[in-house]
Length: 432
Image (tube, rainbow, N blue to C red; front, side):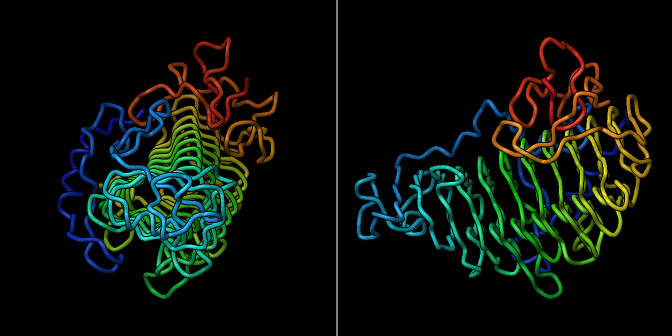
């Protein structure tokens, strides 16, 4: 276990020192950390910007009016205040709504590029029923206005091309929550500082949470799925088939902000010309990232260096901390760059992650099944019956970055599994 409290005090000062005003493109002035950063806890590795409690269902901003959208039978001449008088488009409903309102979107394909300028909750009818298609004309959702609180649930976002960055979502200077969504088939390209975040660009000064979601088959110059410069929390989600094209890499995530990931799976992401097939924790426009990874599974990712994780640690700022995590069978090796900081009970199939904490296993095959439907809302990689990861987690229970017990795995199954009362499994999957 690493003693990190003094480091955090210094990091907080550094963050304040480099905090800049405004938020437009990465090359312009940027604000750094989101407001509302919580005090550091004794074992909090990366500052917990907002704790995501699955039981809370990530409550929406308060508001008084619900508007309805129906892409098949609706009309923008309607008042949109009942399913029978629904709007035709999401954008029209957003336009007539006020801060804190709710928009319920019926099953249909919506060929739209929606700009959101105030706090709102948008509920789809289900990830395979409500589909927002960007038609390669820009981001599906542009959310770039001060202090907006936006929640989007139950839909698929596909075929976005971004506005320089953020193929599906460009998010700046607000708080964004995504629950039960699929983000797929988006791409961004561009010279110089464009082309970041094939699915999402989360700029400095912004907080984003992704819960029970799938981010797949997106591509970008850097950050095949996500480029994060703000505060990003990911829970019970799967990243697969995402691609970063340039040397800065980050096949799934390029992080230069604060990143928390728990109970999630990364598989089949690539950065063939760069570093970090799943995650590159690095630097952009003078801002450097830090991450905490708890009970995740990284397998089958590839890059030129650091098939799963590449860590560029700019002292005295935050590195990557890992605990109860599987990093296995990534190409050409599991980890690259500076060593990870272990909090113990991790498993790596080779020696590249340099894990030396309590309960760490190096050069061990975790014996994983393929990425598939093992129950729950997202694909996972099951532990086979003879996996050495079973019951090999911490004896005090699997915990997140602020020390709270993880009582379920990625699928929502009990952790630890009954009748085991103490030792959870390593990775995102708990064998029952």
